[in-house]
Image (cartoon, rainbow, N blue to C red; front, side):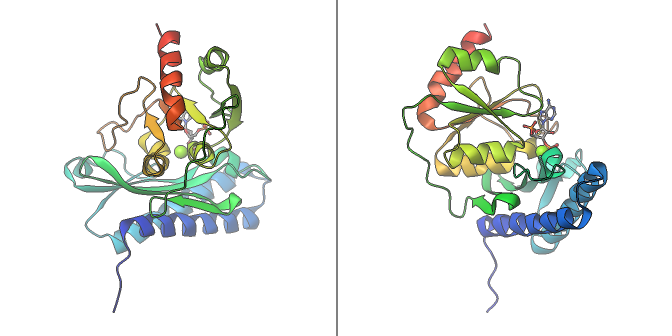
Length: 252
Ligand SMILES: Nc1ncnc2c1ncn2[C@@H]1O[C@H](COP(=O)(O)O)[C@@H](OP(=O)(O)O)[C@H]1O
Ligand SMILES: [Mg+2]
């Protein structure tokens, strides 16, 4: 009998397969022409994910960083796959870096229903099929992951206020995975980002029991007409109230 993969497994399998293709591209192109490698990575991963989803989930809709962003049909659809074929494109094009990811999420009836973050160069994939067990907070100075290239202006002050250290990492997916695997305790971003940068990692984070919200504490809302979702806080649950209070104080 033919078995139909459930959405959680499908998200994981597609993210992992896209990641394996990206590793092969990296080996094939090398790092001499970063732009050529980035363009090939974005395009081929997008084409693989769209072709696979159209074949395996023909009635669903797709919102991809590299695709049609304003397609109005997705706004009245029940099921929309939100994908970032290559998150951390810059890091993907730099030799030796492992902080880049493939994001595959399913939004269904107003909420994130499934998701996967593949970290091909780390040999890991985190999925809602089997959410990671959150590390216990160790009571040490918290570590906050921030963008390597675009850290929000206030995070240095936030780190000082709450007694934390900043850890620069590329890719939103790699930073949220770092929270879920115990390399850092939080990720704070502001100043610009889109739904595809956070949908899949947030699906996995919520399934694992982590805190994920806008930096004002409100809910992250997906499948909106304007896919801009400019700020985010993901952390171990115990740390969230302190960070939200710190951010609030700094923004008064
Ligand atoms: N100010 C900003 N405006 C728009 N997108 C941003 C942004 N800061 C970060 N991002 C996006 O968020 C992802 C993670 O960024 P970072 O590595 O700096 O933390 C990247 O996705 P892509 O690599 O898919 O473009 C990046 O483009
Ligand atoms: Mg991205």
